[in-house]
Image (cartoon, rainbow, N blue to C red):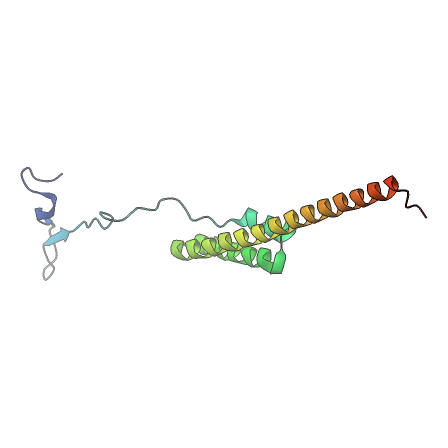
Length: 138
């Protein structure tokens, strides 16, 4: 593809001669620029996290984070359908962050509830076993 002995940066433009019309250029030059030399190429389509957002809305909706995540997921899907991949990534990232916050809040609340009921049950069992042991029946 490149002439032998020349580095890729020093390759001259390729010229193709066409039999043009009078007053038109007879030679058309084509240039190919590789802009991804130092950057990553993102080939994976952006994720909209719509399923996670639906579960967050139905099962884990503290402070309406599940609803907000669903809205951003729908916006990410719309942006992806239009072809705006950067906008879709931005909305998808926001939806993911809102889903994470909703999941953490609900998980923490469930753990606190389980621990609280376990402690209350243990205290009640301890109280009743002590009262039966010393015959404090009324």
